Amino acid sequence: MSGYVLAIDQGTTSTRAIVFDGDMHVAGKGQKEFTQIYPRSGWVEHDPEEIWDSVVSTVHMALRDAGIEASDLAALGITNQRETVVVWERETGRPIQNAIVWQDRRTASYCDNLKRQDLERLFTKKTGLILDPYFSGTKLSWMLANVKGARARAARGDLCFGTIDTFLIWRLTGGKSFVTDATNASRTLMYNIAENAWDEDLLDILRIPAAMLPEVKDCAADFGTVDPDIFGAAIPILGVAGDQQAATIGQACFAPGMMKSTYGTGCFALLNTGADMVRSKNRLLTTIAYRLNGETTYALEGSIFIAGAAVQWLRDGLGIIGSAAETNALAERADPTQEVYLVPAFTGLGAPHWDAKARGAIFGLTRNSGPAELSRAALEAVCYQTRDLLDAMQKDWKNGAEDTVLRVDGGMVASNWTMQRLADLLDAPVDRPVILETTALGAAWLAGSRAGVWPDRDGFSATWKRDRRFEPEMDEKVRAAKLKGWKNAVRRTLSEG
Image (cartoon, rainbow, N blue to C red; front, side):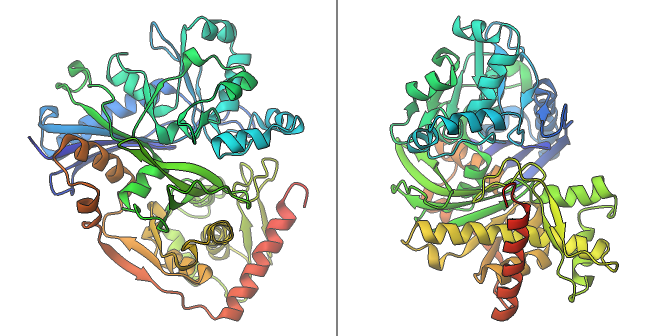
């Protein structure tokens, strides 16, 4: 059997398809951006049909780039933007409205109402999550309440709910597979992560019929077979994981105490806690890192909503840079005497603050502040927020988090300046891997190992290679002063600060 494996990486702003060869090297790829829809302030939507079209086109691109046919593929893996909600008709497969994206904040008041009923403790106990618009459950509840006839149709079993992975599998298999994996299910506010099952109590509170929910499988499992009419061959779908969990797998963070942080549109840090389901006292999330062979591995997660999106804002919103790559050189040129802080709460603040009403702010501007200082502030904001997450993780879990080496991936890690500043502000080593396509690689490994053409967990871990380690160099007094300034800026940005 061929060792070629295809990974579909359906992200927030673009879809990518990557073909890996038998040596787990990239053989071909395709990428396509799609439309970001902003109906109102704080609302973010995607057109599911445009996402589907982007998947089909990028897979064809990747196959052409690799010089292979679909019949040469041993397996297919999927990784996806998490928490984004799609509802479609069971009979036709047509979405009933645009997908509501994980960044969307329209259910903030609904979450507040649930909190006033003293329900957050129940949700956190069962799901490891908090009541925030970020997660799927309140988005789905909103859709059922606001799309005409949706709740009645859902109760009759006429509608299907899914995160993006479920929607894509449904389409890829011609409606034969209605499934998800444990990592995506664990982000919905409806899944009991201790019992590994949809939770009836939470479904009742959110008024969501169980009939519209997919079957939940391990991350490496038989998710169905691609309809041969789509790509020209029947391809088994054997691996699925939400993007941050897929990156954790792709970084080979299989041992408790290992930690990765992905810097894409947002930033997401996961600390593997093994079989220990750590209950955070510092507003972190307890989540499923992966489930393999029926065994669940847990993680502490810190979610930062805006990372690379802050650089996109400099480019598209302010127009002060032409490309994201310019920020590295600009940050190096920034005036060291100016301490400019950007708190990128454009869609609220995530962990450990969870303030859905906070909005972005800039502090420390002078007449001499310009593109260089703003670029440095945007890059530093990512580092400061990661430090906040690491501090919280070290308080929550004493079994090795203190000595963590951070493995990093995502578009922003190509910036040496940013990675050095990250190590400086964390006061911890930062490891950048040789293979930066870790999210897609994680999904591909799940599928390839399940197909028997790629190595097992230990063999895969042995292939991980470091490109560069960034060691902290900043003077402790300088670090302390900068962190103090950041905490002050965050305090002044909080909606009740």
